[in-house]
Image (cartoon, rainbow, N blue to C red; front, side, top):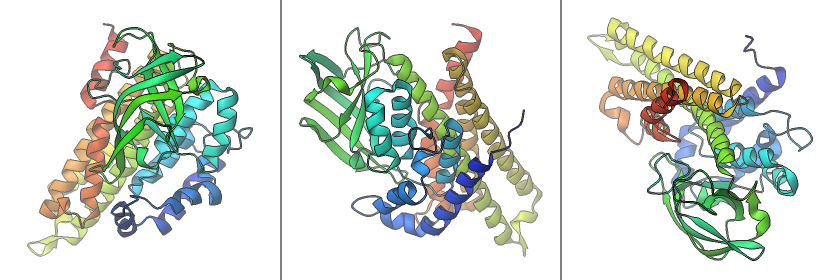
Length: 379
């Protein structure tokens, strides 16, 4: 099989890489993550207006560059290399993915706003009791005339402090863990009754606890059919999981490169520690994990269009491998650096934090290994 990127895909990677090299060095990132806003809005606008990156995964008819999941993976890997906190994943991959899948008037109205950088979407799906079960929902959306009334609590909603819209999972029927009765809504983030508690995350981003207190939601906020949204939610979460694997590949690559550079500079007994055979073996093992993560991610991207069970099995295989690899590379990077590897001043520690967070995002290694076994071997 030919894994060669197209000319357009190479252009996306090269253009984004050059832009981030000029605007997203580690010191600059540290300054705006420590600011009150937690980000530089100008970078998001540049990604949209100057580079057109927010349209990479949308069709030309929608105003994009004609790409899809592979373009999302390319962008996410480059963001991973600079520890990018831009809300590309919730906005373009998840929000845009849901809109593309559903189509209709909402997609026609919202996708141009995403591409232009005017809309930022946060994905409000996780609940304290839910773990990785997307159907385990206590948030409810009860029919009220032509619309709905939304009540519930969503935890660790990444990018919510910056969001213009929220993509919310809620139960419109059925029991707490039933597959039937789950619906998906795209709502204005500033509707009356939406209460946020914002906070910084350990990996430098921002997130919120969101409480919905009798929020009146218009009927056209519903994406897809009422009570039949779980299949769509599983699809966009799988797409997001693969995009996160791509980000992890970029993070792991920088961990390996930074550690390799350190071993060439650090001396013991008058020679660089890179001369020690045991560390040479470690560098090779880390490099192999990076390349395997990249290969598994590409495999997952190529299988996103398969029937649901096959798609989910491929995604779980990729995420299980990438999670274990990110853990291995991150821990070996810190161990090789010693105490300075976890200081605020050194980039390696921040890459390690992000790698650690990715291990549990959208399902841990153990969760995805179990799901893969269940899907391929039977209950």
